Structures are given as structure tokens and as C-alpha cells.
Amino acid sequence: MGLEHYLILAALVFTIGFYGAVAKKNAIAVLMGVELMLNAVNINMVAFNRFLNADVAMGFVFAIFVIVVAASEVAVGLAIIMKIYRERLVTNVDDIDWLKW
Image (cartoon, rainbow, N blue to C red; front, side, top):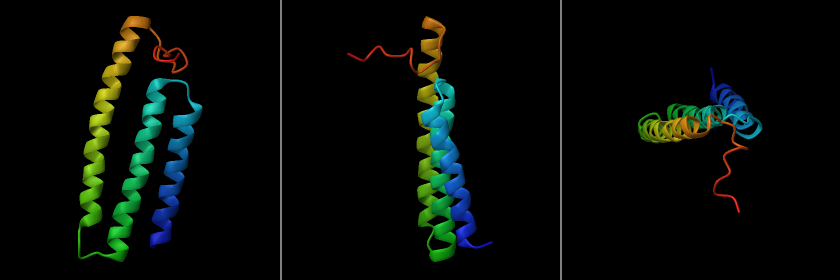
């Protein structure tokens, strides 16, 4: 497998995640879409690190950093969604418009 295979896989995963983040109305589905996009970025970083500069593990370090940030984002996002669901019994992003004018 070459670099282009990993790039195609990452593009496919990013496209699916972007579709989930933009087209879905459920807040959890939007969160899952964002996670897919972050995983696509991780695939790119690890693939570029492996094929372009295998001696330095910079891509792996950035991938681990993105994984940590994604885990934090999921924890905070799920906590917010659970709080909203307990108060209003909805997870539809169209109904969560408290900060709109």
C-alpha cells in the first residue's frame, strides 16, 4: 500500500464525517462526524510521517495530540448534550438555539 491509498482513505473518512457534521440534526451524530474528521487528519499525519520522514516521529506525536484533544472534546460535548437532554428532552441541534438573537 502506498501513500495515495492512505490519502484516499483519509479523504473518504473526512467526507463521511463532514456529511455527518453538516447534514445531521442530532447533536450526537454531529459530534461523531467531527470525530471522524479528526480521525481522517490522524490518518494523514501518520501516513505522511511513515512515507516522507520515517526517522522522526513528529506525525505520531501530532496524532496523539489530536487524539487527546478529540477525547477532551467528546467528554465536554457529551456532558453538554446530556445536560440539554435532561432539561429539554431533545438533542436536535435546531432546537438548541438559546444563544441566537
